[in-house]
Image 1: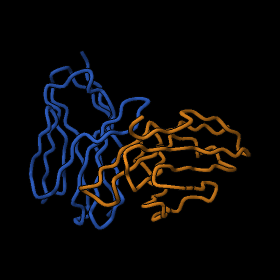
Image 2: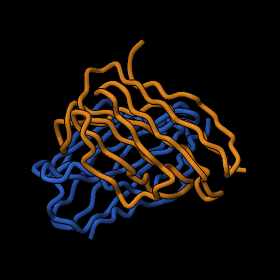
Image 3: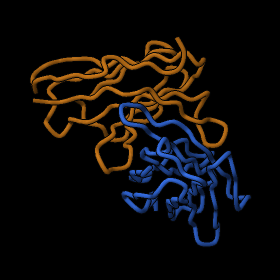
Length: 112
Length: 115
């Protein structure tokens, strides 16, 4: 119940395409769903986060879609660029439990 | 200097050595975390400190010993490690602990290799 399942493990997209990374969770107590971006040699950095009371959140070219009934959420990157090539992690947490439960990561490559 | 700084960036040690990892945050946060990152696996939370008090120890072997002298500094003391302990060790901090209002900020990690 504490797992967050992330897919795909790796993804290659042409520049300008829309990569989509999916995550699924079981614990309905989760109320905080962040996405982190990690470049080689760097630590993860918070990209965007969503609460379950909204179905979509956009920040620049990054969009989170949230489906509460399906217990799934996904990250879309519009007009993807080679500079978006990185590993992306989804996570889930709740106010009552500070521990974030992490997905296993998706290595994204954007081809020029 | 800003953000979360970890030293050293790389460490190679034998199984019988004793070494320490250091983390320092300049964000004024009160919570600090140690994570282990292994390839193709979720981040593993090891320890959590909130206002210098340890609040979480996720069944971490005793060969890893954390120390938090103040809210800005966190250490991970290493002793008699095993080859499977080779990984990237990440430090993070947040304003406090718990969910939405407490995003975690990460350092760039220490790449640890056990010979």
